[in-house]
Image (tube, rainbow, N blue to C red; front, side):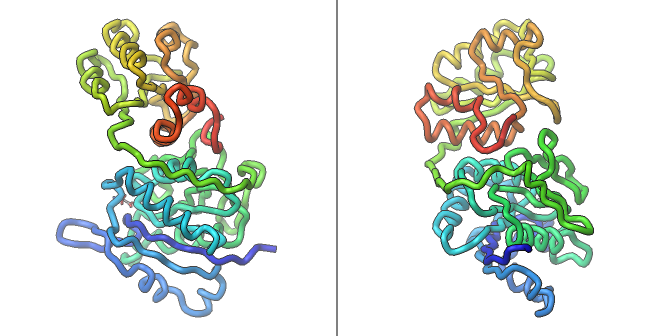
Length: 337
Ligand code: ASP
């Protein structure tokens, strides 16, 4: 028997609530009214009850900054007891970053926090906005999902395992290294065996320095000089390094390796993730990767780029430096295997 709950929908921006302008799509306030217009009483009665809160500054999520994560997590924290679940309407471009960061700031959930958006605005005749919103609302309101999730095109995905994989298709999101948590097809299915266990909520919403974490891919021809230009700044405390395949860098470039090693000696935590879409870093499967073990790079296993980046930000802001490496390789909330 599905549960019936009271949900808060938070509108932060993104295509879902945008309208066409001379410059292209822009976020527009007043989304609640536009949604309610589309739901007659009979349809609304079948949905979980919801309130909607709209941010004063709606953004195209390409403009997302770390302070937005603090704002969103704080909104949820302040209203945690009032609601049985939360739906966050967010742009798709950086949705995976926000879902990942919220999973770290809100650990031990006992109710759903479901992030969604759309590829076509609600304002268009043919759109995926209403379907994504209603599906997210139904998962949040009628199913016991104690996680930060992304709900998109009928898929319910673990937030910190999700990635935007397609720029122009409606099935834009997937979680290449973790099974879907649920599906909304003709029937709604929830894979309860894949869910995190419900916990006791623990909010930890630290101040974040936007300059503290950097990231860059290795590429054929990358020079030590370029890596040094990125890493050699006092504000930089962490770096996500995207290497090839199973976690392999161009280690024949000993100057480049020396720049990484010097940064680690200065206290920068460097985390290795793969440029591949699926699979994990096995640092040391090849001699090239073993070089990273020798200089103290942290293996990122099967963390997505977005989860590695936000986890590093979160740990740097909340932990003493010597703990960052230890916690980086431990799953905190289902983000890695
Ligand atoms: N640029 C938009 C955003 O991320 C794209 C979208 O929402 O689909 O806000």
